[in-house]
Structures are given as structure tokens and as C-alpha cells.
Image 1 (cartoon, rainbow, N blue to C red):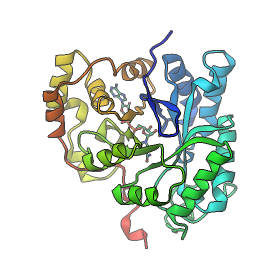
Image 2 (image 1 turned 30 degrees about the horizontal axis):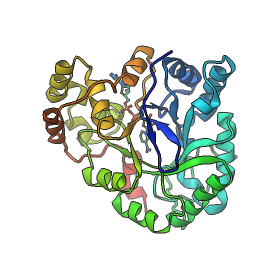
Image 3 (image 1 turned 30 degrees about the vertical axis):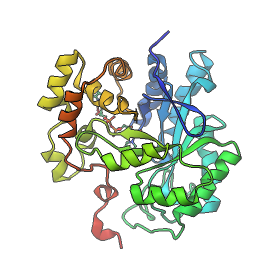
Length: 322
Ligand code: NAD
């Protein structure tokens, strides 16, 4: 059959595909077909979220592939995320059930806290997905719910069988340490922005030392953020055109994208690249069958600029915050 991704054993005991498929900014009109085509290309892990606004269409793509016998539910690894407006303890399970219904499944393989910041509740009948703003325009309203309370509600999802594994995203070291003090069920994964311009080696080492698998998002760096008005995005040369990355790619007879993905997976991280093109889907999945050498790894380590492209404040102006 098709190429398959190697898997990583999570601290929950479940196996997670190391190369998966990202669903952010996959247009609703093409989302069902994109998921269906990615399953046909061999992808088994899908990284979704309430906030991506396309979970119903993702579910349609999955349902079609299952109905046609291309894949079974238990062969898939479906990831979704809790949006900040649902951090209050009594809101976690109801919204998880709604998200599961959208996906037409009865458990998530992995459910993550999307960002470590709680926003005031917005009822799904008012606006869904709710986004960052209480009024749908510009008003940011924080909730007083703590991450400890939200984590307790996430643990209950595991108890109830609604999530097999739970994890965290966009946490920094301090909030990881904090979580480990009170976690009854430790986070299985930490999903973070990770590419040669934002390597966060201390955070990656901390997570790996604590048995938390790190998933890299936005592996291609600025490529996915061109619409953001941030001078850093404009100043950072596209990674796929970087002379260092191109030279390594030529040497190994791979594409720059494959080098960027392998740089993460060779160091034990999982990746979740996104594309709508079938031939690129195959290329990204087929990125684990070669190894970078020590010289390559040193050259890429020296590309770190510690610049972050996925910041909440890129999506709203900071003066509207308080
Ligand atoms: P990405 O790094 O996967 O890059 C996507 C861009 O790269 C697209 O423009 C695509 O056309 C292009 N591309 C993909 N493969 C290519 C190839 N082989 N050659 C040339 N171009 C290629 O971007 P992303 O969507 O930001 O990140 C991937 C996924 O990570 C998301 O879809 C989402 O699931 C997840 N994510 C999570 C968070 C979070 O807060 N937890 C934030 C951002 C992204």
C-alpha cells in the first residue's frame, strides 16, 4: 500500500504518527476533498482545531474515506484543540462533544489546550468558531479560569473516553513546569512553532526530558505567515530558498521542504505540514527516509534567530488588549 509514517509512542501508551497533516487555513470549500486526498496519499494523523472553522468538512472527508474502505477509524489519529473561550471547567466537555460530532467520531486521539490563555465564554449559538474577540470585532475579554482548572477538565475527557491522550500547545517552559506540578495525567504532547528561525532548544529539551513528545508546527517558517503585517516576517528570507537549506537538499537529493521536515523528525519531533496539492502531500510524507549529518545539523542550528511568527498579538493590535 501507500507510504506510511513511522510512529512515536506517547507517554499515554498510544502510538502517534510522526508525520501528519495540518488543517489550519484549509478553505471550507476544499477541506473535505483535501482530507480525503491526504488519507489516500497515506496520511493518518490530522491536526485540526475548533478555531480553524473547518471541522465539519474534515469530518466529511474522513467519513467518505471510511465509507469507501480506504481506512478504518482506528487507523486514523485525529487531533483537535480546545479554544480559549471554552477554558471554564463546565464548558470543556460540552464543546468537546460538539467538536466530536462535527468530526463524526466518538473520541479524539489527542486533544490539546490550543493557547495557555483563557478567554470569556462565547456561546456557540452566538458565534462559532468564536475567535479572539468577545464581540466578534475587537474586544478581548479574559476569563479568570486558571490553566490548572482547565487541565482538570481535560483529564476528565480522558476519564470519559472522549480523548485518548491530552496535550498542550503554545506553552513556554514556565507553564510546562507548572502543569507538571498538578497533572494527574501528564501532557502527551507539546505542540509549538518550530523551524530553523525559532528553534527553542531549551523548551524542546525540557519537554523531551519529561517524556512529552514535541510536535513542530509551521515547519516552513515565514511561508505560512505572509499576510501578517510584521517586519520580521518580511525580513526573514523564505526558508525553502535559504542557501544553507538548498545546499543540504541538493547534497541529499531531497527538496528543501523535506530537509526542513527531516531536521525536526530526526531529532524526535513530530511534524504536521499542510498543502492542498497531492504531489506535495506525498513529498512531505516521504521525508523520513534519509538522515542529515552532523555538519548539516550544526549549520541549521546556527540559523536560529529566535523570531516567532505565530503570536496572538499579530492577530490583534496590542493596544486593544486591556
Ligand atoms: P506550514 O509550515 O505547514 O506551511 C504551509 C505552507 O507551505 C503552505 O503555503 C504550503 O503551500 C507550503 N508548502 C507545504 N509543503 C510544501 C512543499 N513540500 N514545498 C513547497 N511548499 C510547501 O504551515 P502551517 O499551516 O502554519 O503549519 C502546519 C500546521 O500546524 C497547521 O496547518 C496547523 O495544523 C498547525 N498549527 C498549529 C498552531 C497552534 O497554535 N497550535 C499554529 C499554527 C499551525
